[in-house]
Every structure is written in C-alpha cells, then in structure tokens.
Length: 284
Image (cartoon, rainbow, N blue to C red; front, side, top):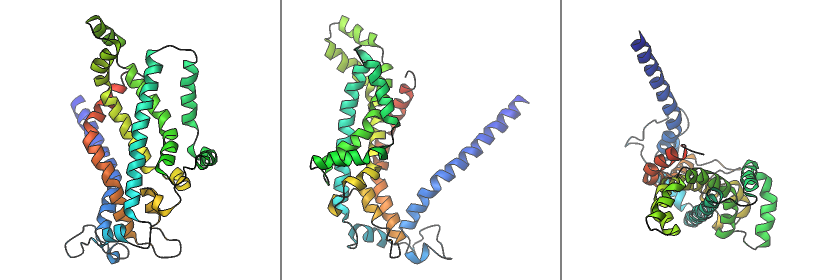
C-alpha cells in the first residue's frame, strides 16, 4: 500500500513538473518559431506551429538587424555588452571586498551597515530615477556607458554584497588559520585556500548581476536617450510603433538575438552556478 501511494505521488509530481515545464518553455518556443515565419503565417487563421521549409524565412532577422526605420543594431550590442561587463566586474570586485570585510572583521557600525544594505534593496529603483538622473546629468555622463554602468551598480551592488556574504560565511576561518600554521602568509592563505572555495559563489552572483544588467530597461530609458546610445532592451522597444502596424516577426527575431548571449553565458557557467547556489544555502 505504501509503495502504491509513493508511486502515485511520484506520478503526480512528475505530471505537475511536465505542466510547469510546458507553461515555462512554450513562450520561448513560440518566440523562436515566430521569428522564422513570414508575417502572413504569424497572425490570422493560418498559424504555423513549426517553421516548415515552405514557410521558413530569415527576413525577420534581416529586418531586425538592418532595418533603417529604427535605431541601429550594432551600437546597441556594443552598449549592452559594455554596460553589462563593467557592471558585473565592478559589482563583483566591490561586493566581494565588502562581503569579506563584513564577514571576517568586526568594526564599529558593522551591523548598521548590514541593515542599510537590506534597506537599500527594499527601495524600488523607480523611486530614485529623478535623483540619479540629476546626478548623472551633473557629471555630464548622460548617454554614456559609464553613466548607465554607475546607475546599474547602485541597483546590483546591495544584492551582490548580501549574497557573497552568505558564501564567505560558509567557508570556515579555521581553514585559513590552518594554512597560516603551515607557513602561508595571511594573503597567501586566502588566495590559495579560501578564494577557490568561493569561486562557485562568485559565478552564481555574477550570473544574477549579468541578467539584471543585461535586461535593465527603466534606468536605461532615462539615461540613454540618443539612438546611438541605446542598449538592446531600448532598441527592442523601437520595434513597437504607436502609429503604424508592428512587425511582430522582426520583434521576435530581435528578442531571440537579445536572448542568445544570456543563454550562451548561462550554459558556460551553469555547472559552477549550481554548486554555488548549493554551497551558499549551507550557511547565511
């Protein structure tokens, strides 16, 4: 009887997992499928659920990348890569140093600083738009990669510090002390013993920072106003016309182009990311 109940429970959970997978994967599949279809097969009664050879086309990708009626594609790619790369690197370096200081050293105001990180995370980014815009404008950094990078770091850094603090807490100080007893200096013990153990945590945190910076839209809309300064989410917005019919095939092709770097990055680091998430859950 117990085996039958267990089998029924396993079957039920498996069925539920399939439903969740279908609901999660179908929008992505439909986006990719639509990007290879002509416009007359995207809407109307003759929908195509598969890009068969008789309807397969790459015109949507040509329209997305080389269409002259919207913002140029290459500058948007360069801007997004530059902003995301700088945001991830600076957030990881500064966040890692802050996490080490909060975890390994006791200093006055340490608890207050930790609480302030939590409070800053709770404030919606939209509440700081005007103040951040005035600061960036005052520094003459509007429509620049540096300006948007600074704004993104403000949003990413609290989460980075808080997450890395959990990973650093999960590595016992005794490991460094044992290495120092064996003859290592303090810095050598850290880089040779502790840092390799924190690599999965850095990767996992870097992935979340990458996704947040790559997809950021609201702040980019305020800071990057010139067509040649747009990032990819802003470039995608130019496909939707208020007064003309929207080319949904090109929109879907553009969405696929934007998603490809994220998918590639995730596939490269997903092994270490899984290990990082598990190790970070041991101790917070």
